[in-house]
Length: 302
Image (cartoon, rainbow, N blue to C red):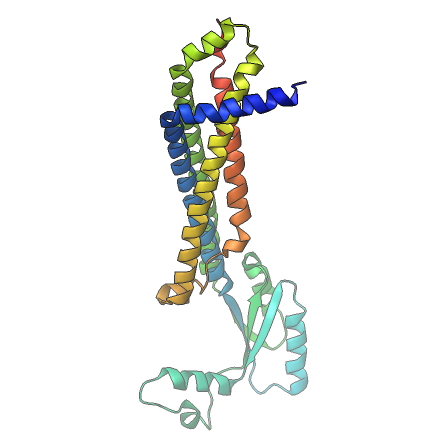
C-alpha cells in the first residue's frame, strides 16, 4: 500500500508536470472541452426536439360525435362510458351551441352563427377525448365507436403515426450523434495523450532506469490526466449549462410562432444539468485519467 507521504509527493509531481508541460496540457484540455461541448449541444438539442415532438403528439385528441336530442340520462351514460375507457386522460363536452359560438369567432364580419342557425343547428354534440398515450389512439377510437348513441369518431391516426415515427427517428438520431461524437472524442483525445507521452518518453526512460516502479511512474501521469479531464469537464459544464440557461430564458421571454407550435418552454435546465455534469466528469476522468496512465505502457519497457 502506498504511504501517504508518497501519495502527496506523486500528486504534487503530477500537478507540477501539468505546469511544466502546459502547452500539451492546454492542447489536450482544449480538445476534450470542445468534444464535450459538441456532445452536450447534441444531447440538449436531441432531448428538446424529442420533447417538442412529444408535445405536438399530446395535442392530438379524438372527437366522438353523438346523436342529437339525447336525454340527460343517455348523455350521462355516454360520459361515464367514455371516462371509463382505458387510456382516456381527459374528457370535454361540446354542445351544438358551443360549436356555433366557436365558429362565430372564426368568421369575418362578426357573423353570429347562433342567430343564423337558431332554429336549425346542424352540429352534433360531441366529446373531445385526450389520451394518456398517443400510441393507444386506434384502440381507444374503436372502443368509443362501439358506445351506444355515438354517431362517429374522428381520430387523426395518420398524424399519430407520423408523430411516433418522427419521435423515434429523432430519438435514435440524436443519441446516435452523441455516440459518434463520443467515439470521435475518444480517438482524438487518445492520439493527443499518446503525443504527450511520446514527448516525455526520455523522462519516463530515466525514471525507469533509476529503479522507479511502473506504478510510481504511472501515478503522476494519472494525476495529470485526471486533473486535466476534471478541469475540462468543469469548463465544458459551465459553458453548456450557462449557455443553455440563457437560451431557455430567451425562448420563454420572446414568444414566436415556434413557441405556440412547439410549446412555451424548453426542457428545464434543472432536469438535465446533473446528467450533463456527471457525464462530463465521468468522461473526462476515464478518458484522460486512465488513458494517460495506459498510454505510456510501451515507454515503460526499458
